Image (cartoon, rainbow, N blue to C red; front, side):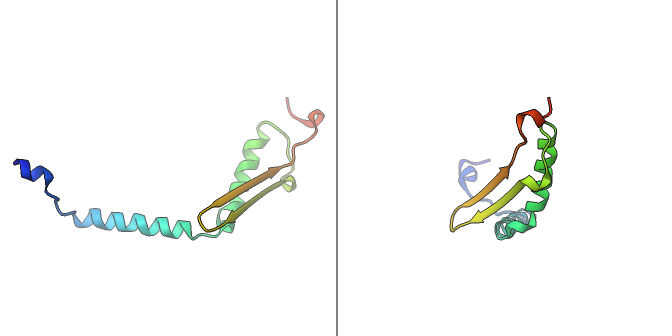
Length: 88
């Protein structure tokens, strides 16, 4: 191998280029998804995890996603039971 061979750009294989394009496309599609697409599942999973430690009513859990230009905010509000009602 020559020294110049190390610094020269080798052309990408077709499969590599296609894979990169697909990853970019998927990233753009995921960024454009509305919050409603994954929020119900996220809320269910959060409730499952919280119930391992504390008894919680599903109606007392709120998950909200707000998107602005360059910022997304995921807000999770969980109303916990009184200390006397918590699991030990």
